[in-house]
Amino acid sequence: CLLRHDMQVALREQQFELYYQPIVEAFSGRIRSVEALVRWQHPEHGLISPAEFIPLAEQTGQIITLGRWVLRHACQSMANRLAQGERVFPVSVNISPLQFRRDGFLDEVTRILDETQLPPELLELEVTESILMRGAEQAIALIGKLRERGITIAIDDFGTGFSSLSYLRDLPIHRVKLDRAFIQDILTCSGNAAIVQGIITMAHHMNLQVVAEGIETFDQQRDLGRRQCDLLQGFLFAKPMPLDRLQALPDRLP
Ligand code: G
Ligand code: G
Ligand code: MN
Ligand code: NA
Image (cartoon, rainbow, N blue to C red; front, side, top):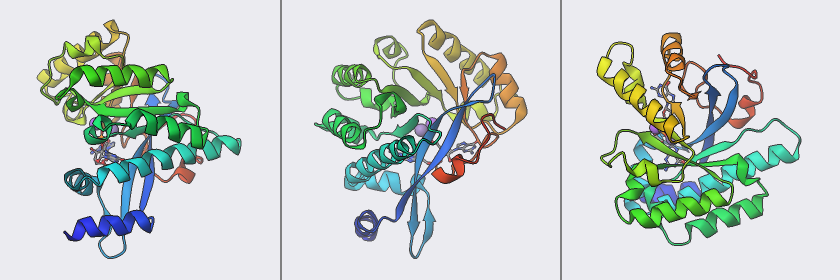
């Protein structure tokens, strides 16, 4: 498989890089954290989207090596900036279900935090509810241990899976991220607006924060603000960008 080989080369020759997208407080626009999003700068095919190569990496198992690189690189980059006295944000890293379920994931995270000296409070992990599909009890226990270490845990793409909502009650997470599919037409689709409002109300009753993804317009921002959504992310505030460009952003967006 060509891509499998290409990915091996890419890992060795550092063709991957991380972009970061700000996540802002809904009522103030203040940057509260950043999500790390991997990019592949392929020497022949140019920039390849993770939407293409993450599923492939999951099929070949290379997501384990790539995921470890992403986690280490995100932690190291933030820790370096901290050491240099620069402005830092908690960094949110996407974790594939394969990576999460693999034996030794907790040790791997612990080792990376040790080696990079990143304070655990500056690390957030984004997992999807699919981690519950096989071995929900194990997943819940692991999330509890990560949380005990001081790491923040978010459920990504919330509302798009097929799990029962009652699992939220048993998961020791900090926040949920509303999928952009619900946000896209929130102003015109009363069904999606009702789902979003229901999730926000339910999450707050469980002391969870809610992040809305894919905010592209001021009207969406205002609407989510009125619905008491806590945090917002989307092109309205900033697109994913290299770390050095984050430094140039004002405290408040847009
Ligand atoms: O950045 P972009 O919107 O193109 O990302 C497309 C998809 O790839 C999203 O679903 C995002 O969660 C996923 N993705 C981006 N970076 C990573 C990563 O480092 N690890 C994993 N597992 N998924 C990622
Ligand atoms: O699955 P996940 O939530 O990790 O995916 C994040 C992806 O969403 C990234 O690839 C990012 O580029 C994309 N994204 C972020 N903000 C917006 C937005 O406002 N509009 C659209 N269309 N995509 C966005
Ligand atoms: Mn994500
Ligand atoms: Na998402």
